[in-house]
Length: 111
Image (cartoon, rainbow, N blue to C red; front, side):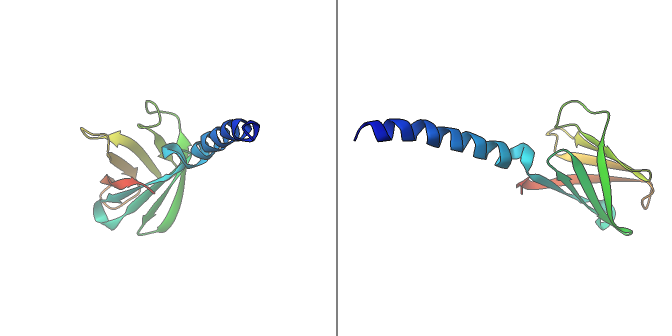
């Protein structure tokens, strides 16, 4: 009877570890509220979606930035840099948007 719990604990531990890999902070979206009514969602630091006056635009991870907190995303029209501000919760959008530049602030935590 004692052998079964001894086998079960490592299995549960491994399951919890693997679950953390797919649901941890890096696997979740971060949402930003931006100037001019735009919204930005960063998806697991691999891509971003900018919702603005032209509809939804996909931005892919680009070179630049320092670590996952300061990532750069772009497409031919727009470039987004995250990790600005004293607490790293701001982003900046440059490109073909109203005014040519917009500032964004991250909403809450991860989603």
